[in-house]
Length: 107
Image (cartoon, rainbow, N blue to C red):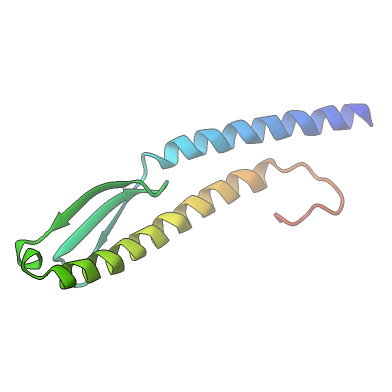
């Protein structure tokens, strides 16, 4: 029993290390999102850090329109980044979970 516990602890530490490595890698995964007409484009990491915003000159003339574009496009980009982030971290966590009876919520 003690050996099983040590094995599980080792596997959990290994999984924790893989999760941290995955988080670092997600800092380098770029997500691009554009408005439907291409006047605004946003790039952010899968860790949801904004890297760039490109705004067409014609949007600069209308503050309210620009704000609407930013909200819509940022929300779409953040949603995509969140989906990538969660999928990657869930895959690593599921892979490293020890087989503990009653704890099969990740399967």
